[in-house]
Image 1 (cartoon, one colour):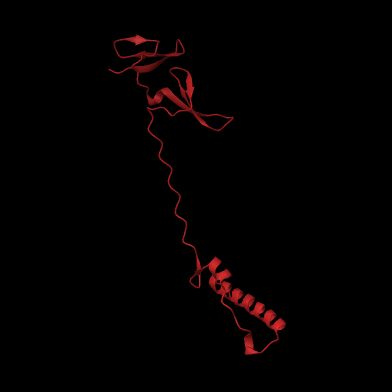
Image 2 (cartoon, helix red, strand yellow):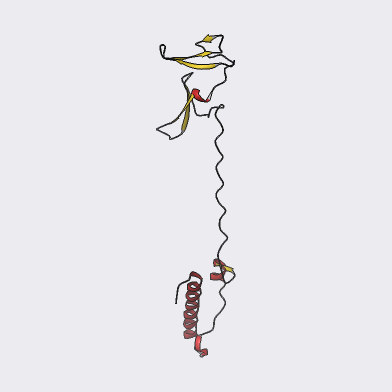
Length: 136
């Protein structure tokens, strides 16, 4: 029969028995049992420690007689990047196609640039609203 640890209420301490022999000293071939340990949380660090009730010793190492902890699940994969007119948002914003002024009017250079800026901004707003589902 393998060694077992038992608690003596009269002596307030653990003893060991294999059915034929009883001893207060932990036998060298004693295999720790899961019930020999208590799990605690260090209030200062929040780290888990393990207390061996039979030896009155603490350890940061999980007892070898305890089943292993389940491994942490991998986080779900990131969703694919959203596309805007078949382009990533960065490509869509930086590689906007040139536009022409509305109404096909001929403008001087200064007013033409202002009109082009207005059209690009308006086109961008319209495109973003359609992608985001916002009514114009």
